[in-house]
Image 1 (tube, rainbow, N blue to C red):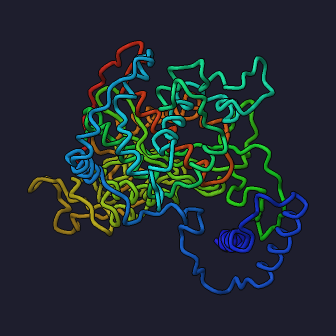
Image 2: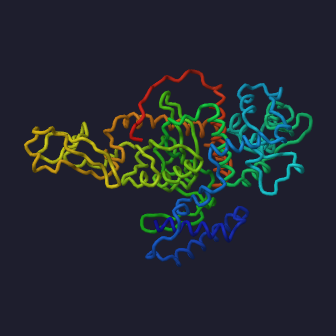
Image 3: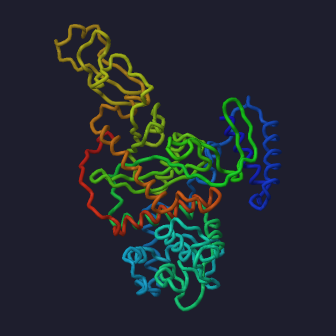
Length: 508
């Protein structure tokens, strides 16, 4: 962990002493990064205990739950309170614009309440009277781009990029000739007012973590109001890489087997990903750690919340932060299915959060003695032939008792008649692998990977159109909102989902 502590100190110094980092030339950045790296390593004492908080070590210092974050229930009360205000009633209910012909855009336009969005995203000192563009207009532009034009750049979307063929001064996407898109965003149809990419960049940069999470909560409130946020859903945790193009390595130092790298983007780092035929096993950028909900009846999955961290950290570091953020926004988390990287091998996560994590058994973990490898039935010792009954678990592990009837076992007077097995990452996790429904929950986990296909391929999160951890996280929030709005609209589903009724775990 010392290499992570060193990287956290370097990151903090660069951000503190060089706030205009993005304006420096590459040569200047290289020299500064080399000097800071040498200075931190020279003054670092590896014999001392690491005092840096864990969120700072894993790159989540700016993504921690705060008091300003609302739960879904609080968001419902917030909306009800403002809708009862006389000024809100005077403003009237939002009516669909006749220029919006697309059914999907019509539905999404009717869902989004501009007044609530302005309340959530308004910065300090916000004065609507001196503005012609509101936070709701910028949000609608981001959602429109994610829904309709995820593959193009912001310059091209706003009409600022004049290099492409058949360029028009007003822009073909939100220009005067595209009345539907202008009506959806809220731009005038008879005045040549436009949104440029600089304004959209400033909008993303101005949003705080609390505002972005509250926006996410607002979309979840809409999802709940449509009956799509079922409390009986199985939750799912996984991550995916988000590569950042054109990242230049400024400085590098090796400590033991660990490399400390400083890139042009201070927050990103180099990590590994799954083997892909057309891509390197290494990726420079970030990893998006997402919490999703899976409907056990039809297997459909939807993204709920996410965190963005450098790509070099192991997935197991983000189970607790995701659960804490999920509870902070009022999600009822009881059961989470995940892959082998998220094992709760010592039961500490269950004791700390009360959430069960189910993952496939680790192949490297051997079964305890006197456990049947096929049925996972437990016997007391080498001489016992009667399978024991499962009693339950506590902080020490699992407890089993003798299931022999009176007079059935001749060794009963000398047998302890009970056995305890400690938690591991194999078949004896906090919920044993032999428990009814565990295998179904593990199979259901595969459906959760659908959300990354939607976020990255359909909503364009795979295309890194912005720079910096804060801006990429903001883009992931907009992509998440667009995904949920599309799912609520339901206009892209071509065939009904097959019902696959699964039994949920009573142990959760």
